Image (cartoon, rainbow, N blue to C red; front, top):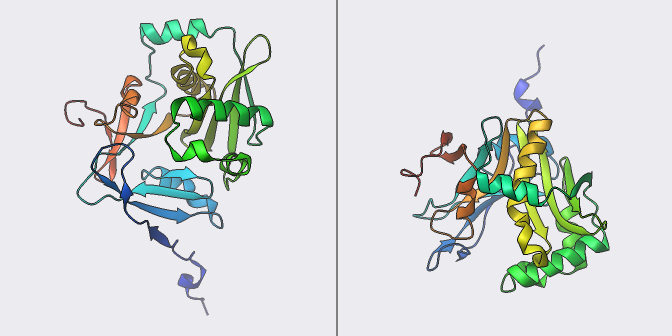
Length: 245
């Protein structure tokens, strides 16, 4: 007798709805998220990422804000991307840097660079209060294939790092930090350009960059990296600035 196939199906992942809190991107708005713990079922990560979810440690989340859809998941078309003149200049400025890819195991050097970055750039945010153990957990606690991409100058000084996830259809930039004293390098932009190169070298079609928020100055920079798609109404669409701002 055939067994009921339903007995062999995976149980649905429980989803949690966060409490409302102040929106970090748009003044006067509140933020609410759907979150899923994928620690015991990491294979679902890629399908959730393709549905607009983002990973933080063993959790993936997606905005679920009442009456607001400002946060649009953003992914860059790696094969069609062409750097602007400014991006080409930035790449040339950073031609002395060496890229290395390693396991997501942070060192004291990573932590010191991170603290310098958040203290300079995000001193009023939650990350500025993170200790060494919190930082290590943020980097190392991942149920999927994750890596640190480091950039060293000619003196072997670490000047920038990106935490990135490997997906079947692309790379996902989880978090980046860099030396704020090296402002002439435009390291934030450079590391995204180089992530696109990494994805191309791996023959991956997409670089996932998190959420684009047209009303937020600190999130609007992603529009520089096009062609791109945004996830809206249950599907990915080619970004049209006139329609998505």
